[in-house]
Image 1 (cartoon, rainbow, N blue to C red):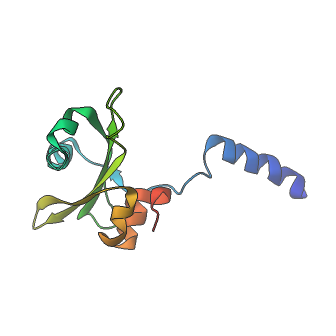
Image 2 (image 1 turned 30 degrees about the vertical axis):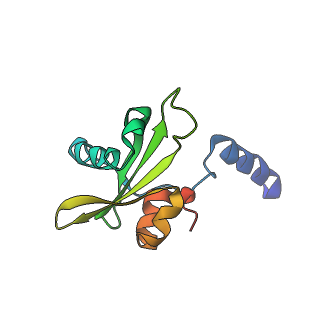
Amino acid sequence: MGLRHAVPVGLALAATGALASPALASRPATAAEKRVLVPLARRQLPHAWQPRVRFVSVRVSTKLPAFATSRALPVAGAGGEVGDTTFIYKRFAGTWRVLDYGTTRVACGQMPAVARRDLLGGRSPC
C-alpha cells in the first residue's frame, strides 16, 4: 500500500472540492428567519441598489445562535457599483439587527471567532 495510494486520493479530494474549505456547522435560516433577516439587510442598501441584489446563503450559527450572516450578490445587469456583500446580524432580546455589512472582513470585529468560523468557514479573512 504505502504512499502510492495517497496521491490519487488527495487529488480526488481536491478535484471534488472536499479540501477547499472546512464544513460549516451553521444551519440555513428558516423561512421565518429569512422573512426577517433579508428585509433588514435590504433596508441598509441604497434605494437604487435594492432591486439589483439577491440574497443567498442566509445562515444562523449553531455555535452561537444569536449570530447570523447573509450574502447579497448582484443580479445580471446590476452594474459595477453593486458587489458581493456580507451582512452580519445579531439577535438582541429576541430581535434581529444588522450589525454591519461589507466584505467578509466586517465579521472580524463584530462577532466572536467561534461564530465567525461557524458562519463563514474558509471565507473568513480574520
